[in-house]
Amino acid sequence: MDAIDSLLRRADEDGVKVFGVTPTVLPGRGIGMVATRDLDKGDVIMNIPVQAIRSLHTVPEDISRRLSRDMSIHGLLAAELALRRGAAADWASIAPQWTDFEATMPMLWPEELQSVLPAEAKSLLTKQCSRFEIDWKMFSDGFPDQLRRDYLYAWLLVNTRTFYFETPSMVAFPWHDRLALLPVADLFNHADTGCSVSFSTEAYDITADRPYCAGDEILTSYGEHSNDFLLAEYGFVLRENQHDKLCLDDVILPRLTPGQKSELKGHGYLGDFMLHAGSKRSDNIWVALRLLSCVNADWQSYVDGEEDEDGTLEKAAEQLPHLFEEYLCRSEETLGFIRALQVGKACQRNLLVQRWEQIQAIIRQWVEDQASAE
Ligand SMILES: C[S@@+](CC[C@H](N)C(=O)[O-])C[C@H]1O[C@@H](n2cnc3c(N)ncnc32)[C@H](O)[C@@H]1O
Image (cartoon, rainbow, N blue to C red):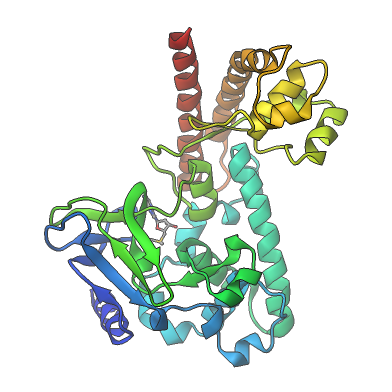
């Protein structure tokens, strides 16, 4: 494909080195990186020098000068992309288009579909939308003639394609906003484990995590993300995901009294009631379940994850089967509701159905594991 060839040529001129892999169109996942020869574990497959990275430090002065000093790095990178699409024409021609984002990114779905996202994805979407509105306000103040849709498209490109990057001046930004665009490296798709990505002050290196055969797709890991996170932030879910989690907010929050909610909130434990194989006793979910099942709240022992005299940890665990049962019922109702809906696109509804079916499978697995542990 011409655009890929010229993207690679241009990246090469910027010093990007690619060894034994090449971008390839893959059905259902856009472009991905595929091995062109057998690779050994430890082989460096890509090296991206700092001068090729698009970051806070490379946003042109004539753009940043018209924007608020408080603008996020995400917002600044999106501003450059929106205003300078022509400057990266090869990249723009192979990047996902608006219709791709419409199909996959919940941020662009009809409200009715957004309202039936699982709790974690919904809460991430709310945060994402408010971050976007702040950036859009600053962008439109600086560039009043620009269209919201063009900026949103650029913002979603940044959302789905950036890498964590840190320089001394970027430390002033929240960690989730320390972002940079890495040419060609942004064509790797994600798996729950993948090639390692390391960066130093000079370069990023991507290194094979195991042997690969010519023709294999080479994946990196964007992080230890649940499928709700991947859905909200990247517009897909993995079939197999060792980092997947069950968010029980929908069934725990309604059980809490206003007083218990403010108690939890005051201590930073309200919401994000996540259950997963690595859950710790001091995680929000266990603190909330202990509060629900005990008479006197001894916060420190909860927070430390310790068992107390009343055996509240045990009592807290006894609530799980009821929560699972209720969540299964609710998910069944939600699935029925989504299947009957006519709004939005079939691919959007299918993605929702896929995610809810995964949630049901996780619950059933927990129930099975608990039964076999007894
Ligand atoms: C950094 S880009 C990767 C390159 C992208 N496939 C492309 O065509 O430009 C991230 C996007 O790729 C897609 N993606 C990444 N990993 C995927 C996977 N395992 N399954 C399906 N889509 C994936 C999602 O659309 C995601 O938002």
